[in-house]
Length: 345
Image (tube, rainbow, N blue to C red; front, side):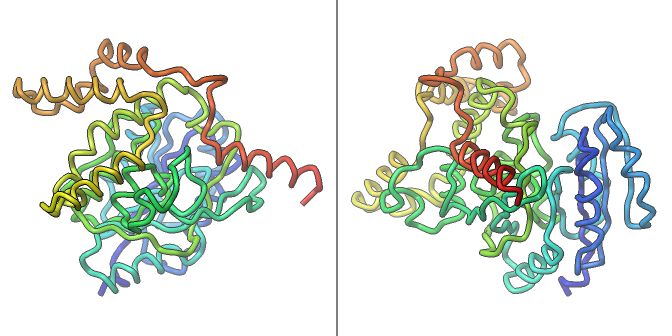
C-alpha cells in the first residue's frame, strides 16, 4: 500500500544556517513518518554543519562534500536514497506538516501518476506569508498573455510547464522511484535544473498539481535566481529549445485536422515568451539539429558542458530594456515584504 512506502527527502544545504534547522524540522515533523532524510551539505562555510549535527533523529543522514552546485548535491542525495518516492527540500524552504501524506494519497488515488506538485505559500525571511502561488493561475514569472489565448485555458500540467516553471522550485516535486530510474538525475544547470527535470518527466509521465499549499518557498536577498541575469536567460532559452520537442505529437499537434493544428500553433505562439531571445533559441535549435545529424549522443549536454560554446551563447542573450528585471512577482513580493516589516507584522 502506497501509504506504507518509504519516502526519501533530500536537502541540498549551502550557507543557510538561519534556515536549515527549520527546514529539517519541517521534514522530521511530517504526519507521514516513514521517511528518510538525506542532507547533503555542499561545502557550507557558515554554521550550517553545526546546526545540522544537533539533530539526533535516526532517520537523518548527513553527507558533507566540497562545493559542487545544487544539482550535484541533489544527485548525490538521490543516489543514496532508498525510498519508493523521492522528493527534495531546499535548505531555505519548508514543508507543511501534512505535505508528504497528502502527496502519497494522491499517488494512491491515481497509480498512473509519475510526479505531483502543489500550490505554494510564498514567505519572506521572517516566514511571514506574502501570497499563495496557485500553480499556473497566478504570479507568472513574466507576461504570459491573456489566459483565454494561452496554455492556461487548457488546464494542462505539461503545456503550462512549457510556458513557465509554475512549480517554482525543486522543493515542490514528489516523484516515483520508477520515474527517477527512467529519467535520471538533474542536469548541470544553475538556475533551472528543476524546470528542466520537470519537463523531462512531464514528457513521459502523467503529472498533477494539488490545489492546496503544501510547502513554503522563501524569498530573500540571496535567492540564486537573482544573481546572474544573462546566465539565467541562457538557461531559460536552453530549457525551451531542448524540451519543446518532447511535447510535440503527445501534448501538441495530436489532431491531424488542419484547424486543430492551427489552434495549437496559435497556443504555442501566444504562450511562450522568449523575452526578446527568439534568435538565441533558433540558434540553439539549429545547432542541436546539426549535432544530432553528426551523431552526437547528447547534443543538449554539449551546449552546457562545452565552456567556450556556452559562453558564446550567453553573450548573445538579449539585454533587458532598462535594468536586469527579476521576475515581476518577486518585485511585487519584495514590496509586500517591506510593508510587512514597516508595520511590524
